[in-house]
Amino acid sequence: MTNKYMYFIANWKMYGNLSSLKTLDKVIKFSKSKEIKGGRLIYCPPNTLISSFSKKFKNCQIGIGGQNCHESDVYGAHTGFVNSQMLKNIGAHFVIIGHSENRVKGESDKLINLKIKSALDAKLKVIFCIGETLNEKKKKKTHSILSRQIKIGLKNIKYKSNIFLAYEPVWAIGSGLIPKHQDLFKTVKYIKSKFKDKLPKVLYGGSVNPKNITILREINNIDGFLIGGASQNAKKFIDIVKKTYS
Ligand code: PEP
Image 1 (tube, rainbow, N blue to C red):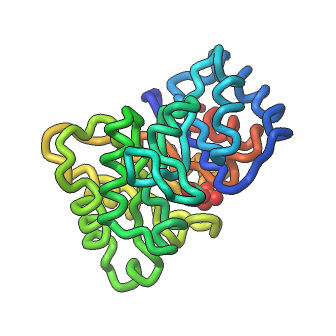
Image 2 (tube, rainbow, N blue to C red):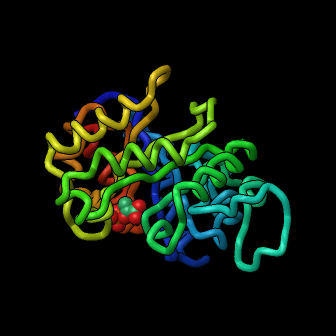
Image 3 (spheres, protein in one colour):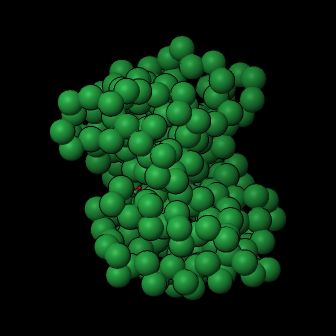
């Protein structure tokens, strides 16, 4: 149980179309009710839906973000990509960068660093994903991997207030598995220890659902959750928030 201000970020990945918009009515109603308590909701739908979500959320406090962006600040010949300015232009205020589903396709720490810089320049808040693979975990490399991802990903970025860290162990994403309570507490503590001046918000992501949230909510150094699969179901998403505060 917690009373603190917590972030609940829905990552819809490559799911959803215009007919999904009506499923948001329940969430909008919930966001205006007292039951929301300290919860701050943010949706990151596919780019095709950002504009429609933005209109839909016009009179409520739900935030909107993209799921990735190109590293260039300017328009250019980059078929299939959008940059952070374009996301901002259609109503996004956040962007997920460094998701493991993109890292695995070759997105390097260096490229992620450039993307974060361009997103911050465009005045977007960044949800910066980090996390180790199962193999790295087995080899007890979690800390060294996270340390490298943070060091290179945030290189030469002085103003970090608009960056949220999302700790997403790769082996926990979509697998139904979550880290052990103590392990997760220690890893989040380790991530925060990397920041000298002001502690960043650290979110957890990986198979969060209405059942395991009763375990996860007890880990008191976590500032919120990045939620994939379960966030596509409005009832599950709302239940996760409600149970965090119950
Ligand atoms: C994610 O991909 O960011 C994620 C957390 O997915 P899931 O909740 O489905 O594990």
